Figure 1 (cartoon, rainbow, N blue to C red):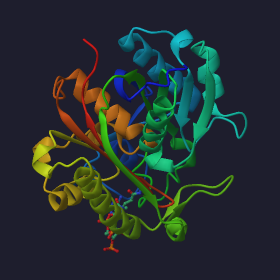
Figure 2 (cartoon, rainbow, N blue to C red):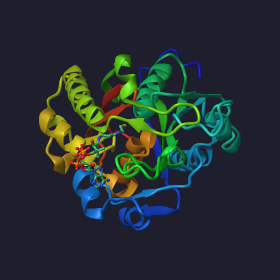
Figure 3 (spheres, rainbow, N blue to C red):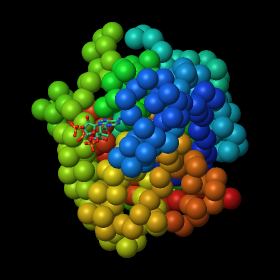
Length: 315
Ligand code: COA
């Protein structure tokens, strides 16, 4: 650390991890849930979800891949932040597992903003780099499957497990062009999980609130960067329901061909969705150096966060 002249940051490493076990829509229907692959796919865009992952293990795996891409080791990391609402233990944070497994030299903490957690953590990490850190490992990871009420067709179809990670490194130029984050604590009753309980939500209300909040937030982030929707090469949204993504994209003015959609394979794995989608789109060469990205997340709370970034990895 200790670089008072730091002026910005950029992502130099990325990775993701999904548990091997896959549950398809058909598996849910065959298992007795009163639903069908057609209904789920048409109403959500989901075909399958990965389940059975431990948050610490998935975080470690995704983090290790991100370090490898960045060409650094844990000894080069000043801080690891794990954004999760499903830590393996109440205490310590899941970041302690990652800290140990990856030999992180610096600090470790968890961040809880539910499905917006990765975006919040990325924005926070950028601020910490501006104030002196060199390199932060930012992970979004959740294991929602233990909290799913598997016999409730309104919610069981939506969730899965996974982790995604990035290494954010000090850079002479700022690639986080603008961000917007917010919350409406008065809406905390529309989606929640009590201690010892399962995911409980008013799906329609979550849908409406998410579209409204993320549309406004994304617009503010784009305006803040001095750009228009036409300047966004890739929209990397939280993957909760493809109809939510379509509604936001159309209101913001981004064609769906420029939205990264991975929900068909992963369902909603909460804080992991955005870094998993980013990792997917970088690996399949859709995202190219120089591209402008809009990251847009929302989660129970309700919380939301948008970020406009230039994709400028190291050579
Ligand atoms: N399979 C078959 N039918 C289902 C079903 C399922 N899995 N789930 C609900 N239905 C039925 C309902 O019982 C209802 O039947 P009815 O008309 O006879 O009463 C009908 O389908 C329509 O239900 P509705 O709740 O209006 O569907 P919807 O289009 O709103 O989709 C969600 C429901 C949950 C998929 C949708 O509201 C959603 O995705 N909300 C956001 C949730 C979310 O993202 N949470 C996490 C936020 S980070």
